Length: 84
Image (cartoon, one colour):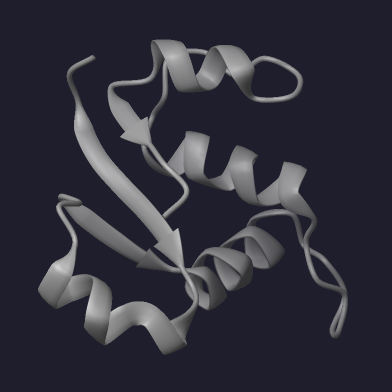
């Protein structure tokens, strides 16, 4: 499967992942969470769930199709998403 390999990780792993991983791009979980909260206008203190974060990434990276549960999103996206 082709595509750009992208990881979403916790800040504590960021430095190590930059040095050791084979991912093309590494995103910080806190930044993805903050972006999703802003995109969906969540009130202060309310954190977005997994669904909001996946939708935020899909819109940010212009993925071609988002299905409920994200299964089809992973197979059709121009990016290869993995959980390290």
